[in-house]
Image (cartoon, rainbow, N blue to C red; front, side, top):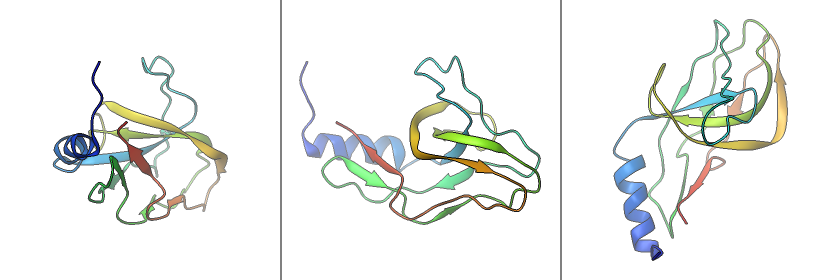
Amino acid sequence: MAGLTHIGENLVINELFRKKKFYIGLLKNDPKDDISSLEEVQETSYRRQEITFEVPNKGETYNQNEIVFPIATENWGWVTHIGLFDGETDGNLVAYSGLDYKKEIRAADIYKIPQAFFIFKVD
């Protein structure tokens, strides 16, 4: 199978990820490629956050702005992965990644993803 050049990789990112809205969700485990074990945080104060991707360079892009989740008004539990969804509430899990450090989110916590920390690469 042929591979993509950086130009081709950038085209994929621009066409698929920069022309639509996507949302970041917090996951409690590894959802697997077949999403058989998808478990997203479901607490009342939780909601997915929109992500806007930067112009790609060499097949790589990242979040343009800091992503800030709402203040947890109850314990959300342990978060081990983040997911990229094509819908704010329902939608499909399009991509996911394990976190470098799992995090227990308790009442009054705020979970943030700094600018340029959610890196997405087409290879």
